Structures are given as structure tokens and as C-alpha cells.
Image 1 (spheres, one colour):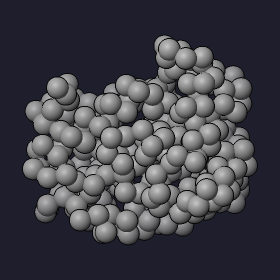
Image 2 (image 1 turned 90 degrees about the vertical axis):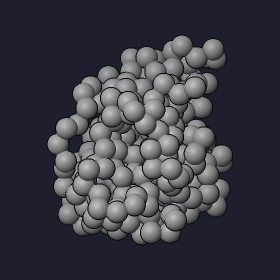
Image 3 (image 1 turned 135 degrees about the horizontal axis):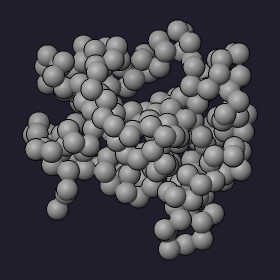
Image 4 (image 1 turned 60 degrees about the vertical axis):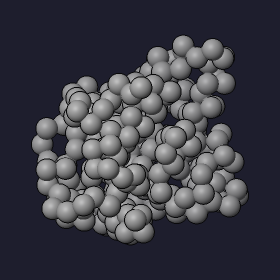
Length: 239
């Protein structure tokens, strides 16, 4: 029995539903970065209005500031999805998105969810979680917090939730990655480029868009338009 239901799901996530004018054709889950999600978003940002115009439910779940899409986070997002299905009376396809830690979350959720998303677009994603463990001073403690309670060695759990290490098993859906080449928080060569090449070697449909001289999670105007275009295009084939 789910904890998250159609009666209480707004306790766990923001949605733009009140802006929709017609029957929803897709759900876009956007996953926040490290230290995000401490409180629910209340404001309808421009993307919320944009997706509403296309009858897409846009969510920003509070899935945990240091969670790295661990098992509890996957369960939470699945239950939010199921609550929305229960509310609307049909299985609405999902699309997975996110930034930084949320980029890893967007990718690994495609593998771990009971309800495989139909597409995935992520920005400045952490792709090799094992590498990221020692990439920055602040990441080891957050990763330990996410996976230290698993009944396997920590690095085994890390690799289990690392998109690069799980490339062989990732679902065959369209992926698009956006990364700035001036990113000093998540090295684009050691994450996005390496992961995209590895995914291509396994025959996945993946596209990498590098944004010259842009920092972490900044993809510029052209990048934002390409991001929106990818999400709308894939949502149109959802139902």
C-alpha cells in the first residue's frame, strides 16, 4: 500500500496541474541538485507555464537533498506517479529530467523505476558516481548518507547507482545530455562525454550537446530551447 496517494501527493511534490487546460499527455519529473528539495516549490516558474501549454504535468519532487536517487527516492517518485495515475484514471507516460545530482537522478531513475520513462533529458549530470566520490570535498559525505545503509559495500552500492557503470542495462529510450565546457563542479569530460561514448557503444539513442564556455547547470538560451524541443517532441508520441 502506497504512502503517497492522490489525496496527499502535493505534500511531496510541486506540480503545475492548475495551469493545464486539457487532459495531460505526459508527466515530466524534474529532479533537483545537491542540497535542493528542502522545501516545496510554490511559484509557477516559466517552464511550468510552457509545459502546461502542451498539457504536460510538470513536477519538482522533494526527493531528498543528499539522496542521489537511492531506493527510497525511487520509491517516492514511483508513488507520486501512481498517485497522479489514480487521480486522472489512466497511466500517463513519464519523462525524466534533472540537473547535476538531479541529472544523475534523472538518468538512474530510468533504470530503477517500476514505470520506465519514455525519454530522459538532463543538464550537467553526474554520470560516474564512483569518480564523483572524490571529485569534490563535499561529495563523499552526501554519497555515504545516500548509500551507507545498503547491505553491500559502499562502492558496490555507488556503482549500482552510477549511470556510467549501468550503461549496459539502461533502457532503450531517447536520452539527451546538456553540459557546459566551463563546468568546474562536474567535469564534463569525465561525466557527460565519457558516459555518452559508453552509451553509444552499447547501442543507445543518446545525444550530447556541449555548451562552450558555460558553467555548471548553465546551458544558455539555445540550450534551453533545444531542451524544451526534445521534451515536447518526445511527449507528443506518448499517447
